[in-house]
Image: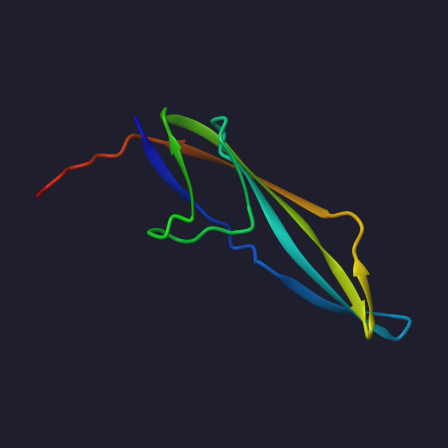
Length: 112
């Protein structure tokens, strides 16, 4: 069985917000890195969030059917800016999401 499955997340590719600290606006810019663990030993690290079918930007081909536990780890990093001052933000924000999927063989019919 060679069953391709398309993956995507609706997480934005950039996050920007402004916070006020002691009356000073500070702009925070964050970008994510996506770490996919497809539950079959295959992994992928990318800046892309994926896309709906048929684009298949993030795809894993399963060789066996059954339950798989897919883990998506999103690591946010970035920088801050306050007027002319700015610097990288030390550390990262990590989010984890795990979903159970059921992989089954697909019926394929070829018609010339």
